[in-house]
Amino acid sequence: MTDTTTLWRPTGPVELDLVRESGWREWPPRLPEQPIFYPVLNEDYAIKIARDWNVRHDGAGFVTRFEVETSFVERYPVQQAGGKTILELWVPAEELAEFNTHIVGKIEVTHEFR
Image (tube, rainbow, N blue to C red; front, side, top):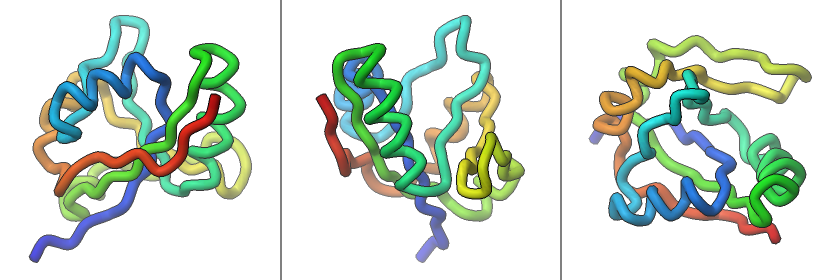
């Protein structure tokens, strides 16, 4: 059995549709203006972004949870993006395809805001 790390990702409806199209197995490539894919390390922070940012900008916000092989994800240092609990991983866009191969199981939606 592989050790995994739980990550969360706040997302809007367009990105979520692409995740659904992948069979809930991978994140879509970043757009040119998105050089970093940033999953977050705690659910409360993901909820705040989905509820307060995605809903305002996209009309809906979703929180997803997924598992990544710990031995792989440890290559990305934890970034403190503000307060003590605002923790993210910064995955360069060009590494996202490889990151996706280390997702264990399916990406699941845990919260929905409209």
